[in-house]
Image (cartoon, rainbow, N blue to C red; front, top):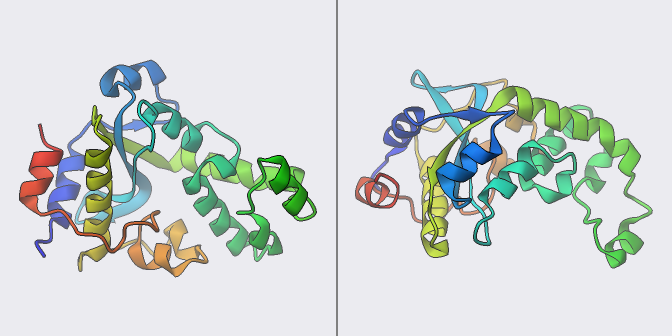
Length: 213
């Protein structure tokens, strides 16, 4: 395997960065609502560069801006796997038993009937606020714009995640919030991703073909 951990970080550290409150129209014009995002987190460094902490994409076409909104602007964690992850860390730090209920689905009538006795939306608000505050204060992102083909988006996402996870160079700070995640996959990968960790990493040639234009 060709380790391109350094190259990935150098490339995306040189791309334009966005953070809250970002301008939706600017991002929509840049991306045509299709592409991927590369997240950075304050305090996380690698070899003098800002360390990448998450790779994300979107399933349906034209949904990138909405996906970013689910992470940055929503106050409902059930619409964002990323928000779920951060919330689980805060619950774990607080040794809050509500951790076991945080990920319960609660949208459809059937889900509400099944999980209603466990889910306390009012209680969740204080953690939703902590999640939002952490994201707004600490997260920024670069964009891989105008990737319209779903298979290409998937390959980039899987390739970048697996390249970051499988590198011997991966590190995180001792204070990284993800260290408190109850799922060891987050702690071990040192990124906010649990899917595609063991897929085929990108080599330099494929990275340049798929991402650099």
